[in-house]
Length: 108
Length: 108
Image 1 (cartoon, rainbow over the protein chains, first blue to last red):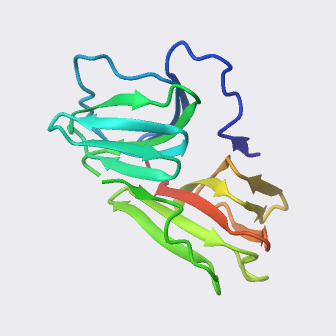
Image 2 (image 1 turned 120 degrees about the horizontal axis):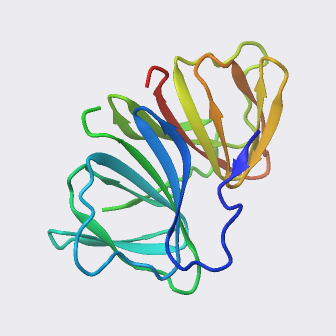
Image 3 (image 1 turned 90 degrees about the horizontal axis):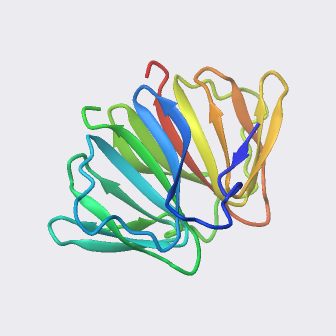
């Protein structure tokens, strides 16, 4: 009945891997796997939804448009309000970083 | 800016520990820490909300009223629809089990 979030991790990652775990009208839960990936140098994520993110394994750095920067390691979680521009500045190149992201409407 | 989900784990657990990490109108995320705890022998959880649960550490068994039973270990996740009666039948007595639970309305 249960699935495992660490199953079917790819051996090689050319690009970040996004896997949807749950999608309902007002919620979307996804797993993101990164290894050394970062957002493009120009541009920001500017999301309509709120996002609650938790690092399950590995480490990654989130940079905000206002200059704040925070590195998340295993077990660290962060709330990113809708429209708060951000990007992934760095992820550990030596191992896979597994993120859990919960997206939900800003209006809720 | 970030908090860690494994921080402030209690040394001793007399009862299960529920910690709310996020509460908005249509979503509630909580951490649950168990060690050898189980639900009372009689009665079931009969929740108005859907629940998506992920074991971050440890192991626990969920029993459903229709007799299904599933043991979740680190990384295992499960969706429990609203009104699906269930209980925690067992959690590892030798170490702490850390659950992440995401609750959201059945109507969504």
